[in-house]
Image 1 (cartoon, helix red, strand yellow):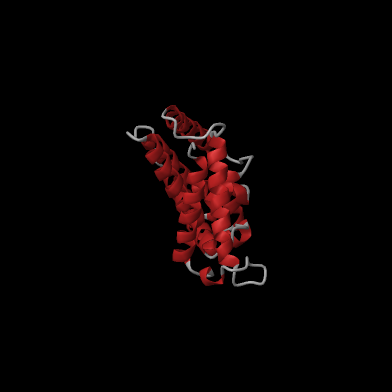
Image 2 (tube, rainbow, N blue to C red):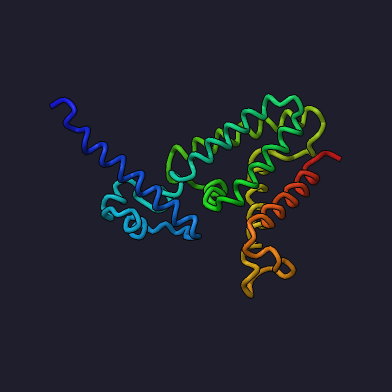
Length: 207
């Protein structure tokens, strides 16, 4: 019958959104394991439903961060038209590091060597290509030191964001010395990330 499949499809879409919402809540609370049993319980759906939508926790995480990958790719492509290529790279790097600091799941997916979802691999490759094109423009105006490519930039951004997030652990005995004033302060951690980004840009700029 025409339209007979609509209710099941609508139910499936609602369940998928409930699972994604529950996963976002878990990430916001610092739980990056995204165990599907726990996510299903949060979402109020059956475990089988969770596995039908997301066969592994990794597939769920990659689905969650695809919007951030899309945004990063859009910005990289916009910066390709910047009148000042170095200024474009500066904006891309500082904005990207701020996002990676605020979203450790995004940093994990971006830094990973292997992906679960083909769409993730496609978006990452397109992002690498766009950053490479931007670096060529920066290199053409003599502003970039030799030997740096798009993969280097994205990995360095992930490294800087990780270093900044270490400040969140300074309240524990394992936390780095001398940063106790930053513990639990997102504003201070963001400022630290900005400082690190500035140092990274200084290191990337041609002498």
